[in-house]
Image 1 (cartoon, rainbow, N blue to C red):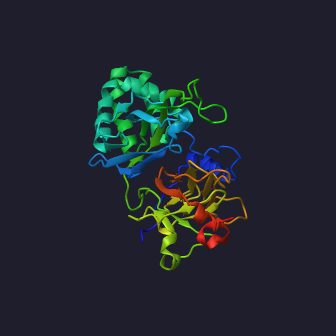
Image 2 (image 1 turned 120 degrees about the horizontal axis):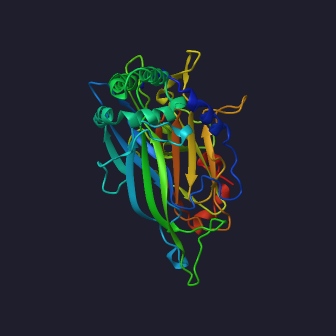
Image 3 (image 1 turned 90 degrees about the vertical axis):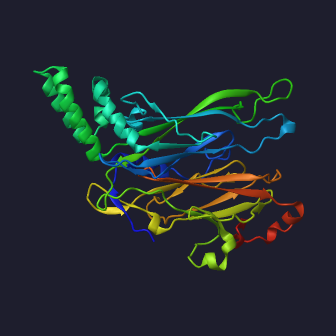
Length: 405
């Protein structure tokens, strides 16, 4: 078992995270936000999510794009699959954050260590240290960017700016820049920094109408459009120690279940474990019939939950949120998580229901788990359509087998 970790809770992350969890509930009747009706980017997995960063040593980070495709196109209906034209990676070393729409204090730096398919990029923290040193020659521009984003800055940076302004009162820029730059570097290494990685995905896919149906031309062929999807991912670079441990990506598993899970269930019913982040696992075959509901349960080992320290100095478990996506059927909930309405127990179960009037086609389910300190993990699994013969016995399924009539 991994020991719990304790770190300072970033106050700016708590409110939006809690609101997102509390907003989770029943999905609308038509195309909820977690239904994959077009090409979607679901997030970026970062390994590790918190990178060692000191003047003497800087770690490396691997970033992997998590994307999802709509239900495979039916060629006879004139539909076409999405085509990825390009995936470009870049990083902003000093960003004002989400509240300032990720305004960058300097030009973004392109990432060049990218996989052949463009979905994975590697970034060496030594480049951050090198980039910081290079800022000394353009510190005037950096100062201007920091001035604009001062309300989003830490206290150390605000103090540096105040001292810089005081210096300019009776000295020249050439005299004030060097000490201000050294103070700025000290702030970055002392408090760490959160560079923001930017992924721009260029895709050609079908144009959808207001009902999310493909737009067809006069010849019955799908009308396509070109678009770019921009995704941003913050990563923590800092001096992680035993007293200030680094955040980890959360671990979780997805099971078929209609009741509470206990640790002996994997021994008694190993077929119920669908997919897990804890090592390799062969997914069992899951079949569904028209109108059938399948019940799934997310389980989170307590040892994978890090701790954060609030303003009161008391360590508590970090919040986490699971988002459920499907390109067929409808989930009963968009999100589940560790924050619930007062008086309610945590419920990490979800039910996927298929249309009663359509044959079930091979369905892809994605589940993305996020914690409040930039950790993110992703799992996916497939559901196949059962034969008509198999579906005749649907009424015999019980919730223990993962089926709900």
